[in-house]
Image (cartoon, rainbow, N blue to C red):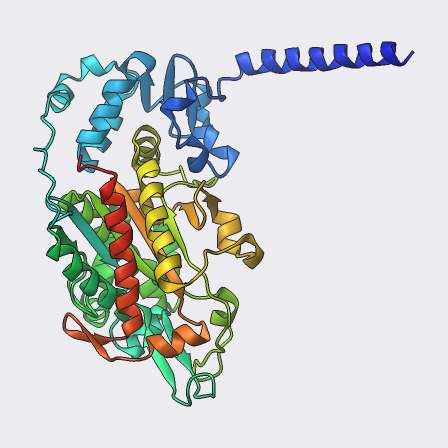
Length: 456
Ligand SMILES: [Zn+2]
């Protein structure tokens, strides 16, 4: 009786499996191409709606402008199986702007019908650099991006990236007041010095405190350029005109609004452009974290409570959410990340750097127990502890290997008191010895990565 019952069950399971397989063979949204071609796919797709914009099957990968075009089978870019390797090679060699042109010209054409791109396939690799034990980074081009901009506390409050705490026993009876932008720039200066000494060619995106990539201070920009830049961004289609018109022309937008909604997005775009023009082997994006809940709770003078929490993490590209393939430039970035090894290599670099944070700074990697909203909603944990895929403007738009580091929490009481000190020199600014330790941690992580990798 039992046996008979089970035999029915097996039959049912078999039928279910069979019908599921049938379903798969007709469902063109499923991935068929050998998965070894796309080890990053699992880190790229946060929400299933991403498949509204693409199809991967045994013949091709197709990208669509929207779900309707997908229904009508009108791809904006289709790559056939037999040209996949050439396409991957092109993506590796072409600058970002040219990848965008290739994408828009491709449509359903064959690559051989776009002969002007073939010359890039024949382009020679960069000359191999002979290893030099005294100069382990000889020939390496490294871009460093110190996060945020503002120099003074007044401006950092508009930027909303500052730490302020009342004197207490925990602070050593001194008031605490510093901003993240100065910490990141000091770290960049110290790191650059060390990297240059071992042969690297280094570019810092914003070498001067208080000046972003627009080349003028926010105050100057606010007075002279905010409306012309708003119109320019609208005309270029980089911001939503109806929303922004309502926001900036019909409401009383504050300086903080102008800063956060226009000045910073332009600045971030220019950072990615500057880094891509430099064509680095590695990009290091430096930030300092805060433990969210305390950040929000401030008194009338903007003082916050310290926390005993502290953790480290880093980000690489990926984790696209439902609405994040609406724009063509984002679909192009997605394709580049899918077909290149940028994410794989970035995870390797970020793992070396995060491990170095743990060892050098004695700060643990973040765990799920912290239950951080942005990690849950916007990130995908990679196979390396503390390293997350996250679709940030810079992780998405910078081509190549990168690490977006968040070495520690600035509002941790021990860290805050330490970071508040200004006892050592970092370029033309004073900073804390803790910042030197962070720069050393990045440096060790980069050296560890370079040991196992040659410049491409
Ligand atoms: Zn930051």
